[in-house]
Amino acid sequence: MISFSAALGMAAIALGLVLTPGPNMIYLVSRSVSQGRRAGLVSLAGVAAGFLVYLTATVAGIAAIFAVVPAVYTAIKFAGAAYLLWLAWKTVRPGAQSAFAPSALPVDPARRLFSMGLVTSLLNPKIAILYVSLLPQFVDPAHGGVAGQSLVLGLIQIVIALSVNGMIVLSAGSIAAFLGRRPFWTRVQRYLMGAALTGFAVRLVTDRSRVVVAA
Image (cartoon, rainbow, N blue to C red; front, side, top):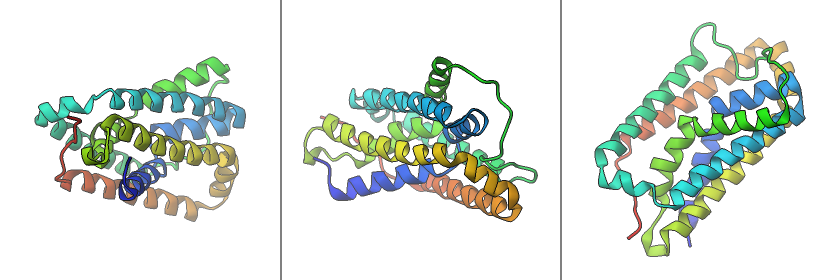
């Protein structure tokens, strides 16, 4: 059984990640704005399938690899921080567009929307870093089976991510229209996102904890 503090910490990180712009958000928003809410929800189902793939790998003990080879774990942390800083720069650089800026996309069938959502999720470095280097740090072998704790922690992340992304999909059109009429709030949204990404990158670099592995 996971502790309350572990659940709260995981929930906070999951919420912070899902609220910062990244491949998943950009893909879901672009599909919802250009093709409608149904397309956004089908794409979200594909993203959720990607989360489940990562969760399954985590429960199976993939973190053990990074405990055996600490240099790989450290490299992933710094690569993840560099990626988040790059996202932050893309968000705030002069001429950058909001994640909610509408873009023209071809109309795709449901199967393609789902598969593109799945691939986007699997190739999203934010999610890979979350499951590989962050989730294991909330696992405490003293509280029982590590696989079970990893499963619960992963499900917390999935529930939060799907809830927030679902609201974004359903309101993407309205948000895009609101920001389109209010350039000031568009800039505020971009800078807030950039600050959040930078803060998370700094946290990754300065974090001294190590991967926790089941005995």
